[in-house]
Image 1 (cartoon, rainbow, N blue to C red):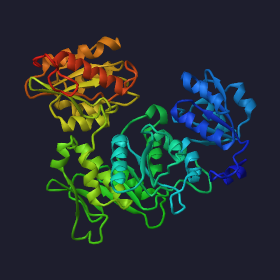
Image 2: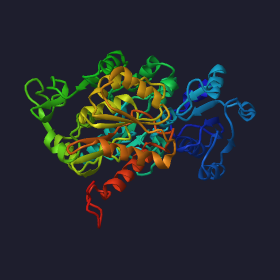
Image 3: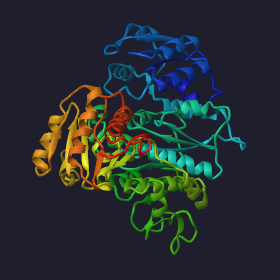
Image 4: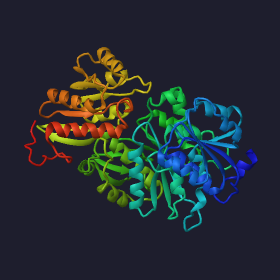
Length: 511
């Protein structure tokens, strides 16, 4: 079996009849099944649940589907006797099916391994596949991925943001239009599966970055060390530039420990004055001292903090994302002028430090995407003294350090979610002077109305009300986006402001 898999390093290799079990049937799982079916493999998809659309499409593409509980190894999988198992990112290392495959010595891949092997389906004019640029980190991945792809497009490259950002890499690999560069956002889950790769041609990105590292997904990985090791995989076999965060020692250590292609450079970024191989900020100007010949004595201007402020991009952690994305784009030859052009029209995704309304002197901000303490700390640093809306599903992460640090400076805390007791206790221990209000209702339809009513009572002219939950949303909401939308709707209902933050028609717009 291993000999055959070692030969499957091209779209044009002989995949016909290869028995592959695909675990999971969300957007990633379907992209895997669809690709394998197109290659002629014998595919069995196993999933605990699936949408009506995917359930209907799997037989259409020529694969078999088994829907039902997966807490035990189903007989259909044993009878199928797969030569290869490809798991969707949600399947943790301790999942019974993952353990079963590993104990039996069955090759175990993620979707990224498959995508790398078949990346030559559509080639560039010079006959080579698209370059890959890899992005990971506890926070900022999606924003940096979008930024880097936008910069590359402005620089004349056919680039696409793919991976954990929403579009499966396999869909981009099979796009007949082809690309010059794929900017791939990778979760720690995808990187863990990538760490298992044993093929003769391991993934080798043109450039890579781990933006930062903090506690997250510990329930999936089992420990912070395992989480850190998964993130570090992003730098392996990098060809041109390993970009790291100078303010985060863990990312520097990852680069130092990585096995990279000879000639790959370490490129640092942070908000300070940059060294000769870094990107940073000098007197409010974002500069590149890495990708120019005379980097010992000069620098290239990329943009200014003032210009970024005009685009809503001046929060410190967003400036850091801009620098990281610029480093990746510069590694692929994008000119500083193209980076400036890209930034002029760039907007953050919804629910990322998004101003929902300004009414009665109070600014209401939706950062529902801050789903862990590290992300919430960045938001609180950008808006010190805010009325902080916090809580949800903590995912096994201790919030005490965040409360003791950034939380102690909050004007008040409004606590929501299933893990409220842990958060209230953290305030009692670490920030007893901060007024804490609990929203005890578990009803999704009522939570945000109560939150906004409380915040409205506490906030005064000049204050910021900040939704930065530091927790996942699935205890009470469908997603972080659902949580953010409901917050924004409740704010507009309370303040009489339109969806763009202006007065709603026919309303005075006051408190």
